[in-house]
Image (tube, rainbow, N blue to C red; front, side, top):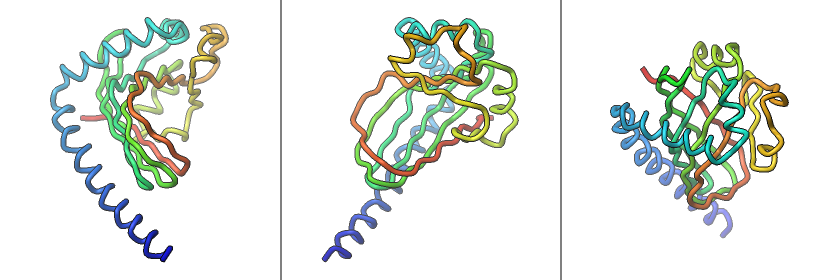
Length: 188
């Protein structure tokens, strides 16, 4: 009985992943084609982030560049995935377009959308993003995830790491425990 149940859950998860990939990748191609709308959304999300979080504003003063993903969609049931497009701003100007994609497996269920910003604090960390064949989060330069509590004590003088990342504008509910991989790739 248990084997049948887990077999059905696995089979359902496999179909869900295929449907999720189709649903995420089809609109993503249309979004990537419209760079002006993506840039507008990324600038708006970035402005809201630095207006709301003092640490983000402090980091923005010293950051070499900021990569902003205004909307990442994540969903899963045992098997999950996430996707979003973003813009790299260097000295206030658009320097490139990127996407982030990831997959996960484990005890998870739900769907959510959120924004994500990475503040590159030195040229070395920025070069890693631009020279790698896809930047894998968790591999390479030190990335610090900043939450509300830490953000209150982080200043430009205490910031000593390569990259600081903020998650913002979360909507939906996603709960889980499992393995996850995420890759950021430059769009041509």
